[in-house]
Image (cartoon, rainbow, N blue to C red):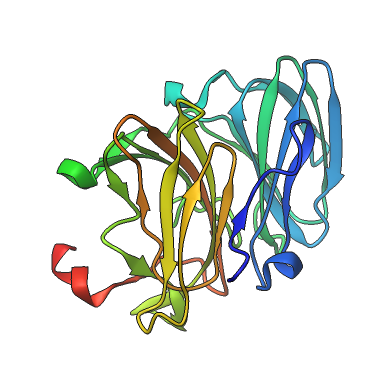
Amino acid sequence: MPDLLKHPFGTHGKVHQITPESAGWRYVGFDLIRLHAGETWSEKTGDNEVILVMVEGKAKIKAAGKDWGELGDRMNVFEKTPPHCLYVPNDSDWSLETTTEATIALCKAPGIGGHQARRIGPDGITLTQRGEGSNARFINNIAMENEDYCDSLLVTEVFTPAGNWSSYPSHRHDEDDFPRITYLEETYYHRLNPADGFGIQRVYTDDLSLNETMAVHDGDVVCVPKGHHPCGAPHGFEMYYLNVMAGPKRKWRFVAAPPVAHLM
């Protein structure tokens, strides 16, 4: 069985660390840190550009030679308010000091120095519905293709109501054949409400050479190296996920699974 499902390896400090080497791919990195109020953290970006997403809580952040002040106001991700984020280019330093309990995602991909450090959100991010009926979900676009903030990264938040499907109709983005389809690796950082709930994510190819169905719990990460990757939120459990995508081209083009292509 491929090791696609990653459980947090702790409750404090860095609780996820997914690198291209550990995931067996080339582009996407994803870390998650959980800190108490008054704690500090600092890193160098190296060859990567990074988007810091304040999933929950507040922190004072310095990056790329500038003091960005306090970022964050969402204390529970299921408030669904727009996130506060910070883009930091490659070959830069950043540091933070938390002013509350905080959960911070570090979304990483190769940088080429094409963009300057900048705040992203909450202004300009609007919760938007995608899909209808039991396929409806709600999107906070942080840095998708229309937002020219990044060299490689594509980042978005998705809220899936209880009983609904998401990342559906099933689709894949695992070939470098633009404009028909683009190659994008992807991580899903999942949260559930209530936190003791569960969701379902399937990752599969058309020929079923990859065919994994996973129960995801609050705080898990799923890696999607290829294939289709729908999610389901059972009745009674609301699902959130933070998507990070990157590949050789910063374009999101996908192909639907043949049995559900008519639903697109």
